[in-house]
Length: 405
Ligand code: ADP
Image 1: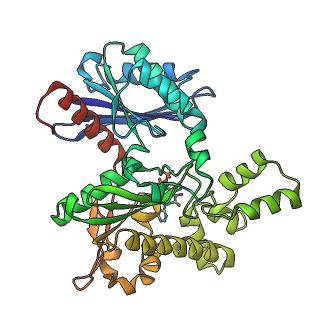
Image 2: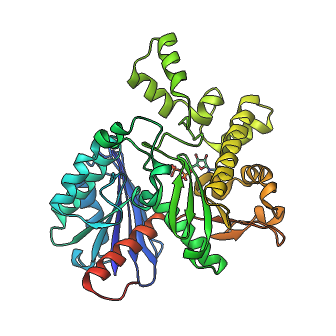
Image 3: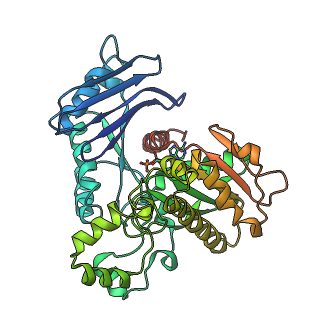
């Protein structure tokens, strides 16, 4: 089955064409600066590549450009649009309504629009991407894969805040958790890599990128996720603060005469390791370079980040009454061996020992714990596009009554 995977943001649209029979990426790329000036980036498995300025006033023009390139006699990878069996859309917030992937219908879009308030930055941009594809490929099945869906197995004890219950009933204020597509892919890949059955193991996935979250997956189901009502809660991130006392924010608003939108902008864009390092950088590579040159706040930012991750791992081991696998993934998790080492240094009480040589190896999946470690510690490259393609194919196959992939 050939699946076009679409990840639509407010001014960018990433895409991949994946053949789910071989799991080969036939082509991939992205449209950037949509509605501004427009840049088109494209690469095929055969090594053809293209990067050029291309004005795109709307997401529809971006999708049009993608489709035309995919069928181009020279650059393309398919003969006509009909060769695409399904379009799989990454959708950020499905609220409590969606616990799995869905075929996108008018009703599904209406429910998504009702969730717009829950993810004002992401959901409207996702919907625009869906609408553009529906207009240009009216006969092609569209499937939505939600970032929140995998986390919907959390129990009330994990997803409710200590707020009056009526706010949950009235406004659905609760913890949703995010990065579900990545956490699902990585937890299952870890089990596969270790020769385990996913429904028999307890796994903690540390998705450490610009946005960062930790997920406790017990026997294939999410028990807890460090992100909450929004992706702001939990870890200290590139520019987001993570957990913070609401009382401090009220105090700050009075002291600095700030209103809520201003405070939210500080918490989302000016905090995290960027804010702690006195605006040096949100990029862990730059912070490491600065730390080597004895920059104290850069070192502190990395230290606080690692400490918070370790704290969450400890609490999730308790939440699952044990842990078999701890997995690092995403930009920082996959590449920053020093941070991994620092995090793991807190975890010796769990019987964790790291092989320093393995920790510096690169690969799609590497076990970095040594033979004596009581918990497997792994580094696995996340692959959200493949997960979306797999889920879309699985859904379509189940609808057709064919055996699942
Ligand atoms: P996003 O949340 O935007 O998808 P990524 O998962 O791509 O983020 O992670 C991006 C971050 O990964 C960068 O900001 C950078 O801090 C970090 N990163 C990437 N490569 C390295 C590296 N070699 N060493 C340390 N950090 C890295």
